[in-house]
Length: 237
Image 1 (tube, rainbow, N blue to C red):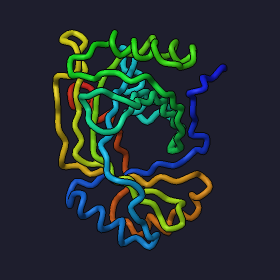
Image 2: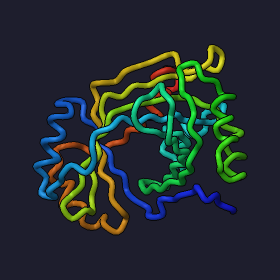
Image 3: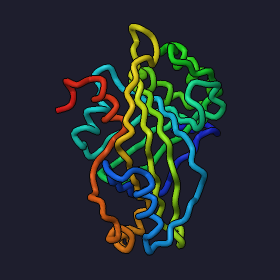
C-alpha cells in the first residue's frame, strides 16, 4: 500500500467510552468533570465540529454500527468552525473500530466551498483534486454522501495527561438528498449531551480511578446512526 505524503495515522489504538446525558445539560456535565479526582482542566477552546458522512447505497456502514459489528468503519470529511463556508482545512477520515478500540486514517483535502445545495459530483471532485492515494479514491467510488452533522465540543485533559474528556452538545443533523441536491432537511437535538472519555489502551487498567466518580451509565451513541435514523424512521429498529 503506497501512502501519500499527506497521510497521517492515529497509530495508538485507544478506547472511546461514551456517556449519554439527557438531563442537566453542559453546566452539570462540566461540574462533574471538574470535580473528578483526575484534576481535569480545559485542554482547548470550545469549537464547532462539522462532519459529512459517506456510506454505500445499501448503508453498509450504518448497519455495521447500528448492530454493533465487531469491525466497523465510518468515512467522513471533518472541519472546524462555520458550516456553510469556504472550508480551508478539511480532513478525510476513515474511523476504524474493533470492538471498543479505535484508530483513524486521515488525509488532507484541498479547500472547497461548502453550501447547502452541494452535489455528490462536487464533493467527489474535491477527492479527485486532492493528493490522496489511489486506493482511497477507489474506496470512495462506491460511497455517497449520506449525512451532515454539526455540534459544539469542549475539551478536558487530566493532570497526568493520560485521560481526555470531550463534551458534545447542540447537535444538528442534515439529510443528504441526491434527488433535490444537497443538505436541505434539518433536525436539531439540543436535549442530549455526550460525554466521551478517551485514552490509550495501556491505561485501561487504571481508568477506574476516573470512571468510578462518574454518576453516568456507560452507553452507546453514534452521531452517524442517530442522524440516519432521524430521517429514516423505518431504520430505527
